[in-house]
Length: 335
Picture 1 (cartoon, rainbow, N blue to C red):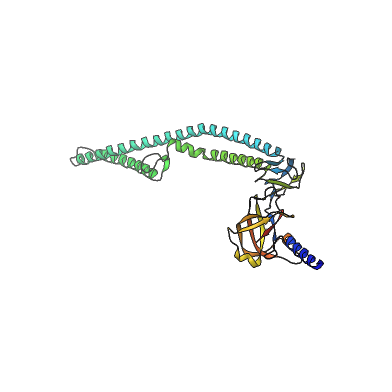
Picture 2: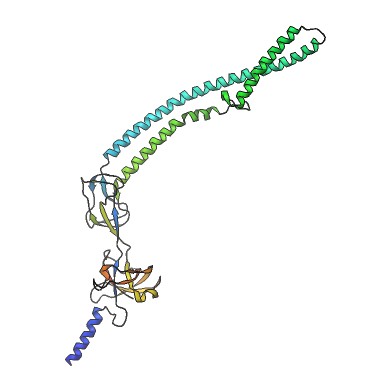
């Protein structure tokens, strides 16, 4: 009888210690999903204030720490003053360039008027030469008069050719078709373009400083808890230095490595049992929502012995019955 009782006790102990898997695959340790995020600044500076404490729960967008922005604010003020100066220069140049373009247009108009006058004079001389040629045959005009008129015609013709060449090359503000190359407003706009580019450059610098000021406020990118505060108020840090560690995870998401011998039987949508540690805990059902395509080594915490590495297929199980557990907390998964 005592030996029989010992055998029953040993069997019951094996069932309890194996979490009910006396005749199947032993449970494997899984962990609530834990994602660690490093909160770092994108600009160097001195920490002005850390507004969170270790273990504090935060929401996405909550302010975690603030860098000193006095130098950035001073630079922004300086750039704002430079922008106002550039705007004033632009307005002053607008009137100056408008007057200069108008003066250039008047010279171009004068050039056009002289050109038209020369063409009209050339046409008149051509007609006069035709008349003189007909009269000279009848000896009604002198040869001197004919020569003088021919000289005038050649002189005016040379002027007209000069106007044609200037218009063909676009000189004197005129195109080869006789019109102005640019409208008044467009000509003024082209002259003011360098001043406007200078303004836009300063505006871009101001925008960059505003981004730096905004980045000086370290905010939580997602919901989670403060896992570590690595730097405190008054410390000077460089770009990329981790100031706060934020830990988060999807509620009810369990990361586990399935034993290699059953890895190929699992798929998305497979239903498994998940149980919290402790005696008399009832298992709950979970669904596989993510599945690794390869066999990997399990985390050291999941090994049965530090000297016996475990290999398997990593997967994520989703269940709604594990509320209140901390990220990284262990559970048992029965396959």
